[in-house]
Every structure is written in C-alpha cells, then in structure tokens.
Amino acid sequence: MSAFSMPDLVEPMMASTGELPDADASEWGLEIKWDGVRVVTYLDGKGGVRATARRGAKVTGNYPELSVLGDLLPHQGAVLDGEVVAFDRTGRPDFERLQHRMHVADPHPRLIREVPVHYVVFDLLYLDGQTLYDVPYTDRRELLDDLELTAGPIEAPSYLRADDAEQVAELLDYTREQELEGLVAKRLDSPYRPGKRVDYWHKVKNFQTQEVIISGWKPGKGRREGGIGSLLLGVHEKGALRFVGHVGTGFTDRALMDLGELLRPLSRTTSPFAPGAVPREFARDARWVQPRLVGEVTFIAWTADDRLRSPSWRGLRPDKDPGTVTRATGS
Image: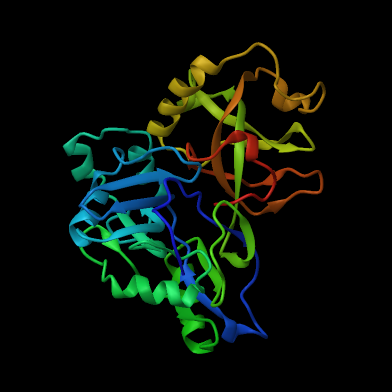
C-alpha cells in the first residue's frame, strides 16, 4: 500500500467479455453482475460523500441515498467502487425502473420513495491515506468486508471462489432463473487499474447486450401512430458510424414518450450514416437525429451482415459516451 491523499476522480476499471474460468478456477472469484450504473463514491472522513459516474460526471445529487455512507464511516476516508441498482418488487435488479432516477439531478422525495436505489459495493480503492490499486483483489475485499457496510440502501455482498464447482453451478442457475445479466469473474491476485479494460476481470453473460447510438427513428403505426415505432441504431467502426439495425420492442409507453422529447431537439435532415449504408426499407420515412444518445439492447446474435438479431430495448445509458460505442462494448 502507498500513502497518498485521496484521489479526486477515479474512472472505474472495466471487465472484458469472457468465459467462466476452468483449468485455473482456484485463481478466480465470482460476483453477480448487477444491472445498474457504475458509481464511485468518495468519503472524506468527516461524514461527507461525493459520487461520480463512469466518465467522471458528478451524480451526488442524483442518489441522495448514498449519503448514508457518511454515517456508516463517519471518521474514515475511503473511495468505493460499486453499482447503483433499483430493485423490483421481487428483489430483482430492474434497469428500466432505474431509468426514472438516472436522469434526475435532484429527485423529489416522492420519486425517491417510489423508486429507491441501492448501492452495491464491490471494491475498495482507498482507505485512510492508503491507495489500494496495487493491493490484490482478495486483500481489498477483506478490507472492504471489515468496514461492515451492509446497512439500509448500502450492500456489500461477498464473492464466491470459482473452484467450488457445486456452489458455482448453483449461482449460475440462480442468475438464470432470476433473469440476471450474469457474473463477473475476477482474478484473486488482480490489481486495480482505473479507467482500463482488463482481461483479469471477465463479464460472463447469460445473454448478449450491446451499447448502441440512436441515429434515427421510424414513425409508429397502429397504437404507436404519431410517435416512435422503432429506433435506428449505429456503432462506431474504423472512425465511421455503422448501421447495425433497428429495435422496436422492449419499450414502455412512458419510455417512448421520453425518447420523443429527447430526440426532438436532435433532429437533422440528413442521415448520419454514409450514403447507401442504410437499406432502403429502413431509410424510407426515417427521421434522422444527431447521434448523441446512447442506449442498450439485448439480442440473440450478430447476423452474417453484422446486424443485431432480434434486439430488444433495455434503456438509455446517459453514463456512456457515444464516441466510445463500438461493437461488443460493455459496462
């Protein structure tokens, strides 16, 4: 451990997509992949709490529930890494529900009561003058467990060693039964590298997800007439925006109304894609927009022509920069 002042801003370390460890399973730990938004919190040791999103935006006011951390550790300086999650009535993470809080900088007490959030802490990056980036994962987790943070809206669930085959199978079955996104496998000796995507943390997903850039929309028909019927999607590839298909399922009526309000001021007369990049059936009657909003979809697979097969809308990702959205990116 090294003695330094508390970091002012930490961009969280990110996992690569991978598989469950097999031959060297004893060297890995497993955590549930929480379906929320990544948030780093900073405790000043005087009861004060700050919070930042993945790319450094201040979100302290968005989630006043996090102020409880100041009560739990009133005299300790710390930096924590975790996920802000909204749960449904059955206790499952509900990303759609979280959407109602993600965009609100100063939520009304009524909204806080209707859509409470929890902060699931899974890493400790700084404690009482000591930066912990080079400390192995297992030691950081031991220090985190010693803080006993589980109280109220704060949770700090333990990890599972990947060499316990029976418990791993039970955990996998549980995530699938509960329709959770999957697991994160982390090497037990892994350091923490802020802002880096590393291969010693693996996302092991139960289904595929993809960040996408909203680049246009098609007018709705029938019940959706007069509004959005589907969204036209793109990702960046070799410095250009590439069309990857459209999505018309997974929306609530409220989500479509909100998207309409957000996309209206982004309207443009020409396609943001290269000429001829969008097939005629999608370009016909399309309403184009500036490619600034990022969303996320689930899908079955990539087609032979590199389109999303059977995508379903999950929600907006205001914590993501459209300039970084490429194929197979993740949180």
